[in-house]
Length: 425
Image 1: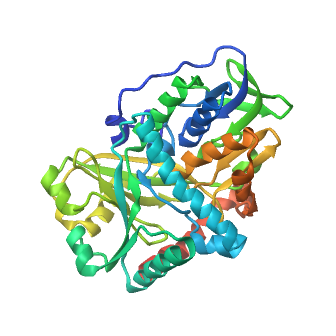
Image 2: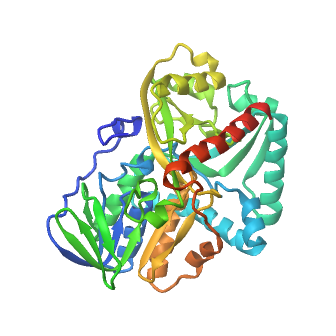
Image 3: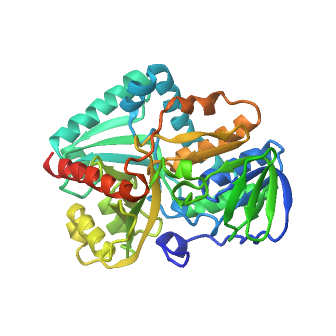
């Protein structure tokens, strides 16, 4: 997970503008910290509203999870709608669901508006390995249709699913025509280019050392400072020591992906007929899709210790062959990992550290579309329209237990239970 790591996405990325490192002191209306999707979206939407915006990225645009993820553009939240109903009530849960559906539409709109070449394809299959999981998919469909008026879903039983997906592993699938998949790094680079065209000053290789909370705030880097009326922290798993109170509420989790050699159009289409993204319903799930150049991209293994497994490529390939044993003869050409941030409840964590300092984090592996609209919501809030952003303040978040030394071992033990549940049903 070093800055030199090559992923399939970096190898197939569009040529992109590189941005300078900050070498002076500046003033701005807003300073955005973090050059992933959330930060680029916030900067773009603020610039479109006439704000002077500076964006600081510690590495390069899209270096973190925004440029390495599974590429699945999904409505909803990692915690699930029932969790939201139980914790904030049906009315607020419905408003949050509507935001997530709008997030997918916003992503599609930005791709079209800014001509972002990122291989956007529509459709997603959520697949069940066990009969119990089929019942869970059916219950999810009924809940979303009746309670949330979402009409994009179709339950596929084993035979129909097998016609679309060349695997014997699954007993049923829930097709969502309103979700999608894309090349996430090219999407992020496209957002950054749009933000720069709108007037955002972007600086790469520019880690933030600290943020002084005075009004205006001062953001300190190694070679310059930004004085800004507002600050937005979009650091997620890479918060490190910048804001310890926020860091304690998220856990960086390492996840891994592989990309096969090119299969050719015919063979890749045989695997996934309609070119939809696929993920299973396990707590520690597998996810996969076709690439534009006819590879299979497959991911899903995780390390809660945050340490890359020595043999992650071979282990991920073994998972892939459980789904598609017919790929036993296919070489793996790319293997990579990266960190995502999860919250204790797997619900997003948006809020304020001070009236003029905002943060967006806790997307919990479900954030490609949600990061996009989170940036828009915080831009709305700074512009004086906080109603939608403040809906998320009703979600209560706790620190991970165990403190600095024991929080990771505690989570590893908890995840063992979920692994056993996935295996035993």
